[in-house]
Length: 536
Image (spheres, rainbow, N blue to C red):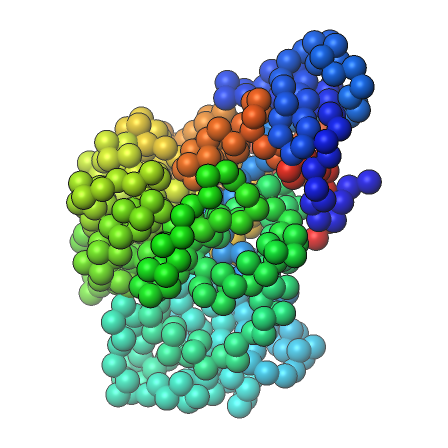
């Protein structure tokens, strides 16, 4: 019977047979694996393993493919787990539809701040930001705070602006913008650092609520076939909650935590040595922000936006400040993970990492998160410098319809250069940025292969020369992420000595079409050698 949470691994040998094994070269038929005490004991023919372990328990798999458990390379676990307490505005095609969803939800949840996430004005016919007045008729004096799909913009009502004291004379904070109407009045849209002016007034969750959110997020990821996650941006309270869950044996999958960029927190935590062996929880590094998001025109570009020539985007954090603390992170033996979306931000990230590595590389490769808009010359630098390209394929297929408008024809070829990264020798690691996007890895794999959305757009794929093969895409979700985490021998591989984190799917995953790939569901999952429930 699958366990709801991982139990201690069994000391009894189990042999899993009947499925093709996924290797670095693709599926391999006629092989089985033996596991014991949470690790892979051996890989070989069923006959050889049965001879070596005559008393082993047999687990018969009816065809399909046995893979290493997928690793979610970039997610926000607490935010994912908190979605159940917010109105989900994802996928809505107009402002009226969005307001209708808010009206329905608020009638069922009438108390406290009205919170939500997922709206995207680029999906609407007008493609313009909504306004505070659009919300006021629905919410009245109840404060409302709704995050854009990318988490880099807030849509708030007049009541929330009043609570935050935001008026015509309120200046833009460093690293953020307060959008205003023609008369200089705040219009209800806050970008990046300006979001903090309102979010700091939210009632903080209790310790129990924090733990419940983390656990819910992890169970959701496990249901998608993940056995480990890189949680990007864990603050002090989140870190304490993770440690309580770890001590209680209540973490459903493995967690590699990247601290928020809090100088004092990182100095305190980076003094601890990293565990030599992989465990269920470990601090992996620090998450830094350089710029915002392309959809809200906060990504920092080398030249002005084609559809808003008055801006080049934002520096959410000063590059010099990021440079200093990224260097400290590297020297401490931990991993800087730098959010950089625009071409200017990616160049700055590469420059500061190159300088930091000259002063001491440490044991882990630095990472650039998203790496969405990158010049051809800078794409080559990822491999030369040994910087991990941590990308999210679904961002490409979600954003393809409006990315050309942001960049213009001269720069559009800079967008999502995955093939250029690989050809330049860079390590590619996949994630979803959940809850910004659906965490479903099979949707991401199809996106990487086709560069088309589920409806088949654009025809032929968005910049199709940058497509990846099925093997390359699965590698980025398994060995790519494991290598990026410094755990290539322990995670993301079906080899002797690796942890027994295993995913079985009921299809020949190397042979099915991209359309069929999007519909694949995890069949069975083992975490640390224990079969677990896929419910969440």
